Image 1 (cartoon, rainbow, N blue to C red):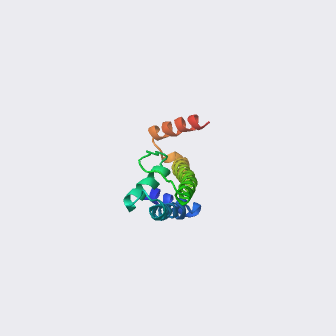
Image 2 (image 1 turned 120 degrees about the vertical axis):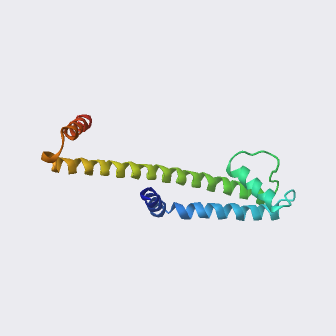
Length: 137
């Protein structure tokens, strides 16, 4: 549950949620424009397939843009997809870093709590603290 909260905070603070949603909407809009502009594409599903092949850089070649508008949509979709992928990568890295920071803070807090209760600890717990202190130093 904490990780979901962290992810939500990362998405909000970076506004990546809006960028990703905008990207998905842009794909569907480009598919509509490609459907209208391209004479060889007669179904919306084919237009979406074309947009997918542009975004994924698969470029299967079964559907090709031939008009200026279709090619312009392809270029814009490629640029937007590179941007969206870069943002998504940054969000994943930020999420991972925050999870690591949180884990370290919790570990450090537990360690300091044990240090405060030093006289109450068993021999095993004292050995554990000693080993951790050696690793950190």
